[in-house]
Amino acid sequence: MKKKEVIKMEETFGSSLFAEHISDGFPFSGIFDFSEGEKSSLGFMELLGIQDCSPSLFDLPQAPSMASSAPRPVTTVKEGSEVLNQPATPNSSTISSASSEAVNDEQTKAVDQEEEQQEKTKKQLKPKKTNQKRQREPRFAFVTKSEVDQLEDGYRWRKYGQKAVKNSPFPRSYYRCTTASCNVKKRVERSFTDPGTVVTTYEGQHTHPSPVMPRQSLAGAPPGPGISVGCATNFAMPMSRTSTLSQYQQQRQQSFIMNTLSPSTYGTHHHGLTNTPGLRRDIRFCTPGSALLRDNGLLQDIVPSHMLKEE
DNA sequence: CGCCTTTGACCTGCGC
DNA sequence: GCGCAGGTCAAAGGCG
Image: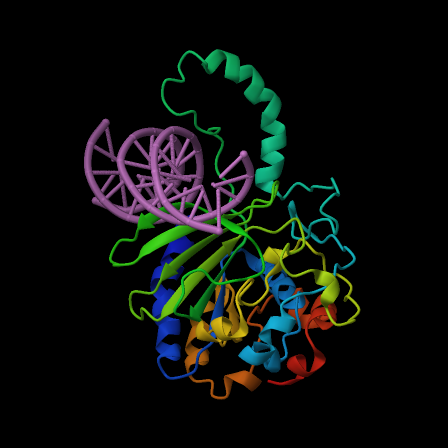
């Protein structure tokens, strides 16, 4: 998806749409998938696959025990040049071509060394990165009803920037995963239409398990095939990494995955979404055109069967 | 001391 | 080409 389209989506459907739902008294998180086609589908499936998606998991009292999952065997799925999964072990060096930033870093290292000498003279100003076109990682946005901006998702983040957002009184914060060689980023901004909601956009894939919640603790559930540790941000639902349960409850983050919207069908499902009662029982994967949805292959392995049936 | 946030400057893409 | 807005860098400072 082109950047322009992403921005348009965010502006058109982003926080306002979900704030609308949230204000109806049903706190949840919506997921936007800003990546492309099946890649986006995979990303979201994996997003779900990291954890049990049963509704109970999204209830606050259960949350602290659910946000971790065990290391899983790797199935590297390629979509063209895009690779959605990363090696199961952080130590693995099998970095594929789609980890664009990491690969680009490797490729440009040698060049950089040469250029470094040449550019030393003109480096009066800040040295900036290469002039190759920037490649976007798959992005997923969540809208969460929360009092706090920084939602705990099991990973450690370092803030590297903050910008004022046009037409919004709330700034947008930029975070980067603190783990070395992990290029996952996230943006956090508060919805100006509903200050009680936080829009969190994840970009990239973690190349490591959560440092906070060991995945081995996934209650003995055998890992499903086709899921890798490093997939699609390895998302764990927002929770407090270090806080007590009361603090956690204070965050009021009864998150619920209600939908995923592929760019091509966004408008359609956006509409249907607003007319969908009983969201807890009506989980759909709105990725028409996705082979995943049709044959349920990978999806079956990841999403609990009852979720697949309930429509 | 290490890690983190803050913040102004800079870079980049896009529309006009 | 110019201006705007989003995104990133990196120095400075705070905190435990």
